[in-house]
Image 1 (cartoon, rainbow, N blue to C red):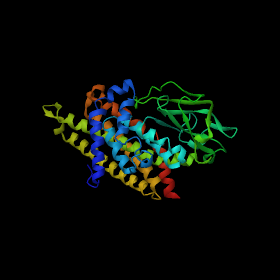
Image 2 (tube, rainbow, N blue to C red):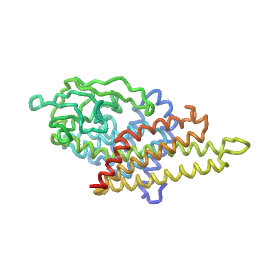
Image 3 (cartoon, rainbow, N blue to C red):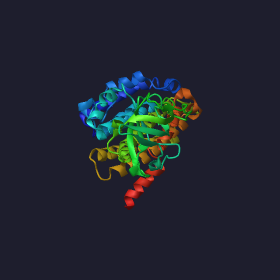
Image 4 (spheres, rainbow, N blue to C red):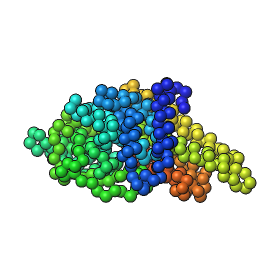
Length: 377
C-alpha cells in the first residue's frame, strides 16, 4: 500500500481489496459464462462504490478521483470486467450530478445504490475515434419531446442497464451540435442488438443500442442543447483514469499469480524462480506497474485539483498504464508456459480482458493526439 495514502484511503483500499478477494476473484471465471451479477453490483454499491464521486446530498460517497483510482485497481484484482462496468456506471452518475439540474439529480440516490444502473452511449458504427461525427439525431416533437433515431455501438450494459446516457445530434454538424439525453430502458423505440461475442470483458453484455422514433421528454436532456460533447469529454477524463486503474489491477493480479507459480514450478531440477531470466522478467514487471501507479495517481490528483493540464495527464496515464499493464499480463502468461494458456489458471482471461483497455475511452493513438496537441498549442 502506498505510503502517501491517508488513513481514509488506506481503509478504502483495504475494503475494496477484501471484497475483491472474497466476492470477485472466486467468481470471475464463472461470470464469463453467466454474465454480470446484479446482486454483487448492489453489494458494491452498499460499500459506497455506486456513486464514488457523486455528491453526498444525493446519496453519493463524495470521494476524489484518486480514491476512485484506488478502488478500481483493487476491485480489478478480483474481476476486471465487473470493475470496469462499475466504472462506466460511475462516469454516468457523475455526469448527471455535475451537469444535471436539481430534478435530474433526484435520480442519483437510485444510481448510487445501483437500483438504477446506467450505461454510456457515445460510440456509433460510423464514428469511433471521430466521436464528434456522430449521427444519432434528436429532433424536437413539439415543445415537450425529442424523437431519437440512430444507433450506438459497443455499449457496455446494453439491454442490462436501466438508464442510457446518449450523446445525440440536436443541431449543426460537429461537436457544438451534440446534446446529452437520458433514455430509460423500456422506452418505445429503444431496442438492443445481439450480444457481441468478444475477446474479453465477456461477463459484460455488449451490444448495439438502437433508436427508432424513440420519444424522450425534453426534461431528460442534461444541460442546454449543444453542450453534450463537452460533457462527454469531461466525463472521459475521469473514465480514462478508471480504465487505467482497472488495467493496473488486472496486471497486478496477473503478476501476483505469476510470482506464486514460478516459486512452485520446477524445471531442470530447479524452481523457475531461481533462473535469472525469470528474475529479470519479474523485476521489469514490478517496475512497470510501480511507474504506472505513480503516473496514474499524479493524473488523478491533477483532475481533482482541476489543473489546466489535467486532460493531458489523464491521456498520458491512460496510454502508459494500459500499454504497460497489457505487457505485464502477457509476460505473466509467458511465465506460466503452456499452463498460462489454460482457462483453469485464469491468467489468459486477464490478458483477454486487458486488451480492450488500449482501445476504449479513446484509443491509445488518440491519447497520443491529445498529448501532442497540448504540447504544441
